[in-house]
Length: 446
Ligand code: GLU
Image 1 (cartoon, rainbow, N blue to C red):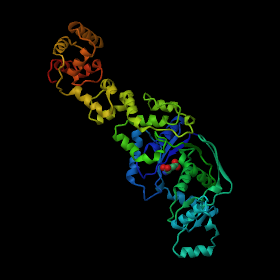
Image 2 (image 1 turned 60 degrees about the vertical axis):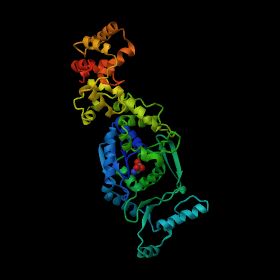
Image 3 (image 1 turned 90 degrees about the vertical axis):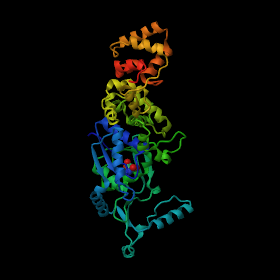
Image 4 (image 1 turned 135 degrees about the horizontal axis):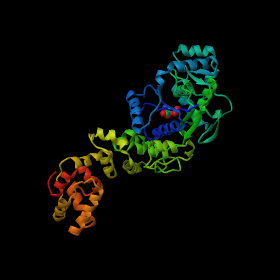
């Protein structure tokens, strides 16, 4: 059976590098294994979930170049959670609890003071039907907890290896809130079973959720999926990443002009022994992908390296990967020759516009060496796109003027582009065309 994976963001904010990494690894896994990726919008927190964040998630994932085969939203699936919950009630796997948040906080405080781990003490199990009737008459509505089994819950993590957790250290998880809604923990387990998710690949911060969800799957009589928990990212100083997430949203990086492919390559390499290679494309990444390549140690992500790496990626991008983006910049007539000539000089894709103007708009040349330029105009070959003719032209200029190296090339460049640096002249000349080049060499605005 081809694997089924899911990426399950909560639409409570913009995607950041931490969750984008989970998306990238799930996508690569699905691509490599010929499986399916489901985008699941985890919007059980109605108060914090917003439609604009949901739209932004789709947009940001698409910007990264990721795609998915199916999409579901938890708020559309409440009937499924109701049905699963009813089964657990019928089988006596869950029990109603009436404590308020304040009462639970007070319990935790007492436990802390007594040096005990904070854990729900199952006091609601002792309630008699009369007690419950009295509480309900007071207007209290129950939330429902799953009764965890005695002993241990274990699983074999594809990355972390075998894991075992004594249930005595855990609180019975709440599956249904007092308002009747399903919690994330429950909805997610029901969804993963219903959607036949075969592999749950997510951050190590979810290990405790995995243990609790294993208990939910067992109570529902469902086979659990396989698990791979990726160690969380730390920053350059080794601190946990989560604190600075605001600045690291994909949106913010996009606004800085960071290439999406640079982000995908960086995130895919993070935690593996391989350094990110700016020359790779999506299909190379898929071909090289292996889940087992991800290590157990928290990988460091040095965000300040991203602009430089992004530049390196840009210099390798094929025309096909940028054609529509160039068109969106208004460069709809830019072709492969233009792109290949200029890409090595760009910091950001938008900089291509500047070179497009150099090639297609009148420009006032900068005249540094009139004698050399007069000779250059006179000897300019008929076919400026012919590389042999270009070489012959340069050789003839050396002989005629005695200039070489920088003394030769700098005045030519300044006249042709009015810039000190840029793409190789041999590639620029055909983009300018003979006529424009000839006028500029003569010091004329052209
Ligand atoms: N909505 C959860 C999150 O964003 C999903 C975790 C998961 O089950 O993958 O952390």
